Length: 243
Image (cartoon, rainbow, N blue to C red; front, side, top):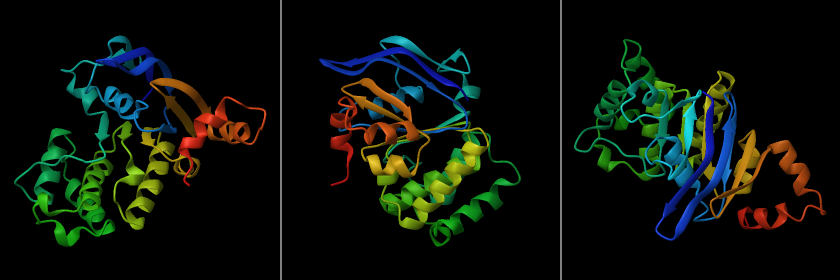
């Protein structure tokens, strides 16, 4: 899916969360959105998911604008926030079933796929447990199972590398995200750590006070970071380095 932000603005009170953002997100790429707290990362992701609307500008998907009543488009994307929601009052397995039904991904092969991922994420023994009993990392892995079974064209992940998942879960995420990009999926995720983007992205978008200050391939970003004459990039990267 080709996703394009056309000169997008978003203001909350006196805070300009996004400022004239223009981005072209190509199919088959993993894009890391980097920035310190308050840079506009989550706002950008929520706008890509259609959860909030721009004050000015627009977001298009394969050239078409988002419409709230376009269920077919909604099913082509999956937004996974840092604290993923689940259907309350039901078991993990029941919650997954409801979500897959909403996405029309509950076909005859769905139970086999769900069982596979429950085992892979070490959640099989918790399949009948209430979702409220899951830890944050387990909850994130459960939502990730839904995403993997649905296999949407657009993945929108808010801070997945700081989600509380164990190393096994993070390894599966990286492997399956890379496999999805090879299938032509578009992946957009947020992080505050430059090191995370260096290991897990094709391109990096650095936001600073709502503005896109850098949108480069990781190769170009590494070359610029190694250039002492590049006085623009250094102050942007410093808050993103893991000290």
